[in-house]
Image (cartoon, rainbow, N blue to C red):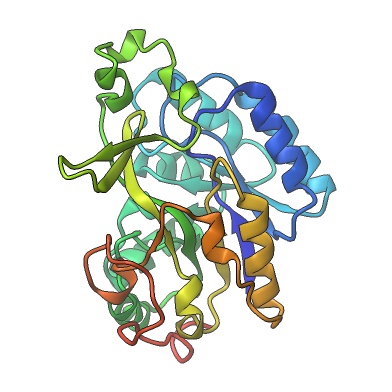
Amino acid sequence: MKLSLGPLLYYWPRQKTLGFYAEAMTWPIDCVYLGEVVCGRRHELRADDWLRLAQEFIAAGKEVVFSSQALLESASDLANLRKLACADALLEANDLGAVRVAKQQRQAFVAGPHLNVYNGATLDWLAEQGAVRWIPPLEMNSAALSTLLAEKTCAIETELFAHGRIPLAFSARCFTARHYNLTKDSCEFRCLAHPDGLPVRTREGQDFLRINGTQTQSAACHSLWHSWQELGKVEYLRISPQGEYTAEIVCAFADRTAGKPPRTDFAAWNPEGIVNGYWRGKPGIEPANPSPGGVQLNNIIG
């Protein structure tokens, strides 16, 4: 089982972003996803910067995948995607337009979670287009995943979103700009002030969501940490970057993949709590626990 570092979903200042990835080169990860997924107006790092980072990660012995935006909205978005698609690395397609670009380049690709694959026939079709790995939809439970994998006929790797705030939805409208009574095209890049997104609470004060530009996320981190025995022989586990403790979380997962005792301070790195309801077929907001409810994938994936 390998570990991947998912694409950075937040908008951080350039130096913070470069410093984060400089540290990540020393972490026990096998694969890193680079590029902008959420918003084409985020320009602290541009295509050439991502390409340079990719070369540094490859020199450090890491596999590199370039992630596409979930919503390709402009000609410049498409031009940046094509530039990354020409590089010597896989492309994570989060939009069917990105699938087309990968096919035009005759490039193998990763079918991202935002392609919303819910049955084996769709996964087989994506494999015919060139997909060599896929990430299930983030709300898919373990039973549905087992059914899908039994339906498929293609040979393809599976990567699970193992830890991070779940991207729930995308919109052409920017929620962060709207919060500040700004338009999307004049947003003043307010996302830079929120390295883990902007919390949204109910009138009763309960954490409900996080808004992150054009994206809404879960308030708490989803994690499969408590469902370790159900994961079986999944090829990759994805850790999604967050403002704090990403290195500690990566190392904790690496210890578990190596068969070392689990770290007891895991919860302290996620003070907003940990949820995994979706994995157990329940509301996603339900707290994570090791109680029965998931389906073991040992005999399905491998």
